[in-house]
Amino acid sequence: MSQNDTLFTRAQRVIPGGVNSPVRAFRAVGGTPRFIARGEGAYIVDADGKRYIDYIGSWGPMILGHGHPAVIDAVQRAVVEGLSFGAPTEREIELAEEILRLVPSCEQIRLVSSGTEATMSAIRLARGATGRNKFIKFEGCYHGHTDALLVKAGSGLATFGHPTSAGVPEATAQHTLVLEYNNVEQLEEAFALHGAELACVIVEPIAGNMNFVRASVPFMTRLRELCSAHGALLVLDEVMTGFRVGLRSAQGHYADLIPGFKPDISVFGKVIGGGMPLAAFGASRDIMKHLAPLGGVYQAGTLSGNPVATACGLATLREIAKPGFFEALSARTRRLVDGLTQVAADNGVPFSADSEGGMFGFFLLPSLPATYTEVMRTDKERFNRFFHAMLDDGVYLAPALYEAGFVSAAHSDADIDATLDAARRALR
Ligand code: PLP
Image 1 (tube, helix red, strand yellow):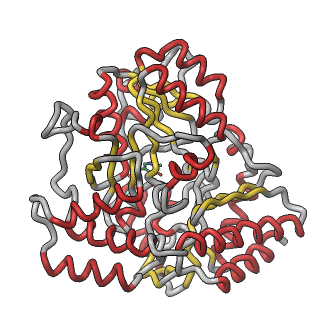
Image 2 (cartoon, helix red, strand yellow):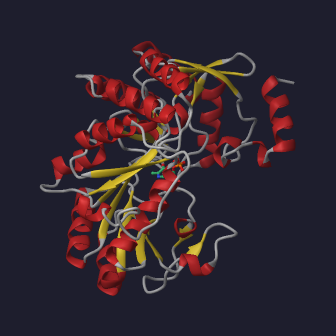
């Protein structure tokens, strides 16, 4: 019995399903999850001592790879100074200043400890600032596990959503309207019906929770226009894309494509914590003034702005802000995606792939999908066989076909080549 099997058996005795976040359990792909003993640059090493090229990177945060010296040094120094004070520190200001310098749509930012907290608070802020309750989200986008966000579409646009999780009251889902991603027509209809009651629309600009699906330019353009016309706030959930798809995040990318584009509220997580629990939401001063202690929208956290997490996040942001960082990361990620596409073509496998900065996705589909329904047309059995063949060959991809992949600055051309060789063997 491998050490991974032993640990999984032991874990299942004391932790539901043996994991502290469901996707880690490998339920979608089958088999035993790997228990990770340590990370080294682009690699992770499991409990059996087997090394993998890591394309999950803790689901996004590890943009510098594991154990980057500048990050480790910053964390070690912070740890010695104190783990938590529950009082303000200068480093929180430094991190806020660094984020705001890179995100011109925000004038102020509030630090929290997880993406779930950040999106939950962003929606409360939008509701508090507008005095409205209802909001729109899109099928296939994930914004954390807050009650009002674990919702699927009702029947037709006149009805609001139903919970996707047990334990979420129907009443909680009744203010959430779920629409199809990239569907401009539905968006128009929904605003025509409910525009005056909408506090906000929350959207992943590049949806990384249905693998990798870009919001089309017409969709994003119309979304911005409709929000402005109806007084609803546009909340861009950049927990995954923030400082991952580019230094200016996805909003910078869309601002280049859509003149004047900017969100009203932005949500960040993952990369801004560099691997420690840290997330944030920000907006104009005019919107942020509604937050306690200035305004009536309550939000708080014992560990918010934690001194070790902020040290880790700051060190990470300073590294990725260095000249040429994203050019190199984007080129390496593109090389992976183009290489995989070529390998698939050589083997006659239907395949499509896309990337932006250090985030990528691939589909066993002949062309890139635009909606959740299209993503789910993937041949799951084939994906699972590919996943396990790659894993056996030392390549750690996301264990579900609806998850994005991540390349770090520690991945070398040799790592990409090794990955392509493994894909060649797997697809053959
Ligand atoms: N929003 C997006 C876009 C995410 O991808 C995630 C997590 O994957 C979240 C929010 C929730 O973040 P967390 O897992 O830190 O609560």
